[in-house]
Image 1 (cartoon, rainbow, N blue to C red):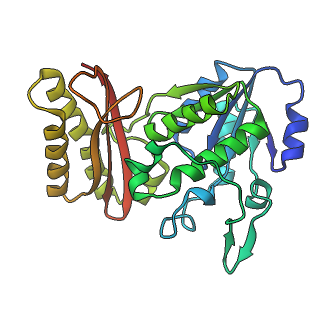
Image 2: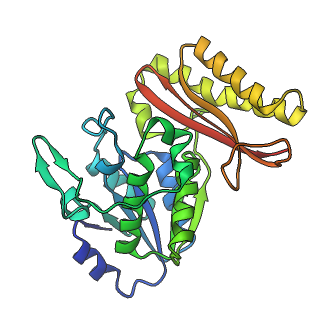
Length: 286
């Protein structure tokens, strides 16, 4: 397995590699990431995994400085998983116009991709600019790697939707494959941010998925309207000590608010447990 930090070296290494599958990550890898690598291996001869903590998608008061960086351990996991290349660029490599600003970086001169309006809803409502940062770095990585296939997890379904829109709107010759959410035995979706949770909080965190399961069951049984169920779930989580951002039923295809006519549904939720923000969703048919 090659570990490459420069764009020039990566492009040289990718010459004549045949089909390329790409898995972008921010590192601190868990079994959910490794499942995406496994999916990628099924679709291409060469699997490239990027590890880059993207400052452009973090807000002013978010956890960029404290985001866990575990490159050595990540590379061991990726070698065992069968990745061919790990791309580990610096911020300066990805954003050549970034300039030092005190202890951080000024990225204001960076050209950005503007996300579709849906980026301002759900997670985007409380994280303004987040998905522009995601779309920008993914567009840059797609241009650098030029993969045939890219694999993303369903856990961040809004992100997956926006990346699919990016590929469609920019006519990129890349197939996007979605990997199912990998969960702890409790049902908690695996996430790099789960490491912020105490053991007590980690047990409590499984409540989010269980709450979604319960309202999906009620939808399938036809016992209440979607809006009423979402509001009830939000209230129940608050009573359990969660700081709820949203619980929302959406159309899987458009990510617009679900109507009584929609059959392909997804319920998405975001909430904080202590200071840790968690997201989850369940897609289903009714």
